[in-house]
Picture: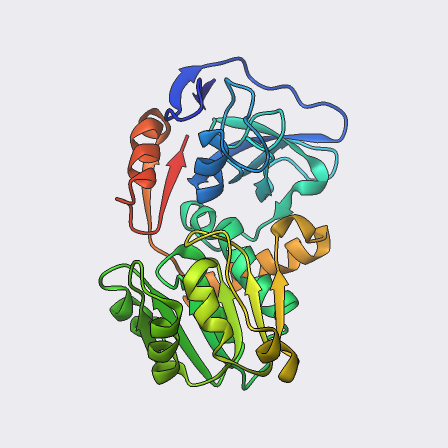
Length: 324
């Protein structure tokens, strides 16, 4: 079968012929129809992630969409979404014609959304959805600030906040044109982030737009998170799920304690199977109804190296999706 093989950390994977995987006890064989290239894939393949340097060669792809060929839990032909631990632990991922996946990791789908679009949503959508609703306790009437609103997590965050009846939703991002994109997704206001801006300056500009907010979705950390923390209303929550703007943010102890404000860490790895199933079911339902979407570009498996390089350079709007 054909698969994208990553032969050395720091290099893009290339399509090669490999032996077909054989499922073991408790595992399913899935015919993959779509596999996105995510920031987590790029991080793991760089050899510099907190999971350590992966053993090479391996097939990347921390998630995918496909159809069950063999499984003890699901009938052949069942359409599924699935995560993998490729790059985080020994084993291959989703960027192949077929993949072996633990039966209990499979999430059945209705098939109401194009496979490539659902793959583009995938873990990023699950993260945004559950970080807001489960970790952040989003309730109707909350005012929400989404940092990094131009990325897949941020785009889903803006839409998810609206779908949960937030009173106001604000975006913040660095990329040119991100304000127009946020407005198109229903944002009430937008903060243009700037490179190397001081916390005090950004805080003032942010307050001018958002006033105070009840909930911050933060995939950035760094200076944007430091500023957003100072915009939290009493009992406000900031949920961090990434560090693309820096690994550390500062906060005022007096500000946090005086208003019982909270800073919460989020990871998809903490989700139970039931929580993951529920999130994906909601995401698929809203995507099918046209209420939830992200941009993506499809590449055939034999162009996996090109797709990888373009995603890495930021040349793909949204998510690059590989289709075997």
